[in-house]
Image (tube, rainbow, N blue to C red; front, side, top):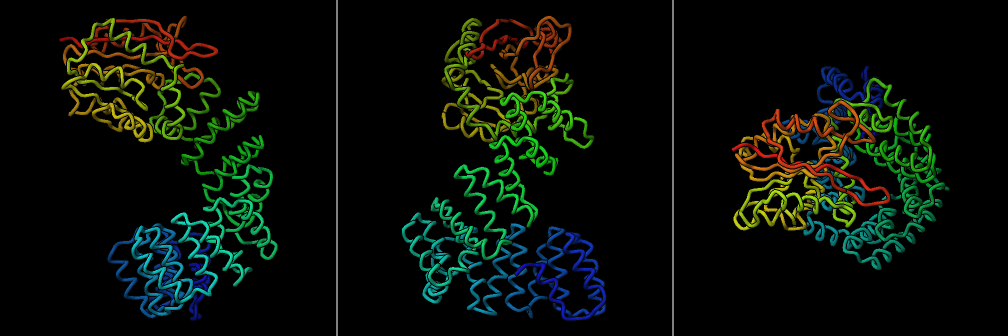
Length: 545
């Protein structure tokens, strides 16, 4: 039973009910709650009005414990289906503990209510209460083992323990009991998905849709199965059908964009991305992926046209603007947004790690050569910070300088890459932070003998804020080693090209001097080996003693 059903089950002819229902259906929950407030003035004991008002309040605000207690007291006269309605709303809002309270109340009213029993089992699963779930399932199966919904639930429970043979047994029994109902049950398709039976999902799903072509859960399951089987044209058709029935969730929109990428339907993918919320992280990543795919397909001009359409919008985020500037090769004065750098590094952590730890990446050897040239002593118990450490490509080199009583700290703004760095067990500490904030924090003031920042500063436009922050974290006499992509032949400090910043070496030297760091080393090197080598400049600077 949905909250929409509860809202329409009015028994009084009181003026305003239709308006309240209409506001709810328009998702104008706050206004609907206000209408119910007015209705309750005339009919203060109307349990339907109280329930609907509570549903509206839940939808538009985070209610207090006191309000929740009031809900429990006020709805004591509700039938089981009314409690289930409130439980469904709370569950959809991610409040499973409170949802369980109302499911239990529904079962107090009607112990044999199959929907309530199934709902409770699923809530116990999501709340990670295995002992309660086991006992509950044991009693349920004994009481209702002839009911197809309980058989599906038993199959789901078996699949949790990877007993797919037993899960399949229960599903077949459920189909014999009531095939038509089982084929419309989303749990049935969820279990088949766990069993990796995508072909069966499609077969059963198409049969179910023949009987009822408006079941959104079945369309969703069929779409996912087609995607898994890489049958992208069929997936596209299924998603189009689903979109005609409901507004797609962000997750489903993301899946559809992926399908359109595979079909090289870039115009449609772009239109779909424009429909997603501007602040969606998934949208940002897929816009970036769209431009990448179009360029790989040789559609450079079409790619630029789409980037221009986005860039000309007044309401785009700074993250989207940065992506567009990269495609259009526009000059920028501002550094890459920290939020975007974090998002990309989180999303592509494993891929970036594989590159950084491959033989084609020469950053570690360049760092080692630099430290040897500077005659930094080995095993001198230095305190070192690896800024933008990623998965830890520099860790093995730096660790040799922190033995035996020093410490090596890895700093990165991506939690995903830090997890990969932790796997190396080389760092003494890992901290999630952007490098400027880390260096400027009071606890890190004058703490480090050596700070390294390799292959990171290409995200920054003006390097002066970085240098000033690093200086504050260095001990007197401490050294700072970093790399840049060089900018030559232009009388300006930096240039933005292909999504990264290139810096003029003379301006870098001047910025170091302004920050009161003395340049002590500069050397060109190859950072990446490939069909076209990528070069860099390695700098070292020292804080005056």
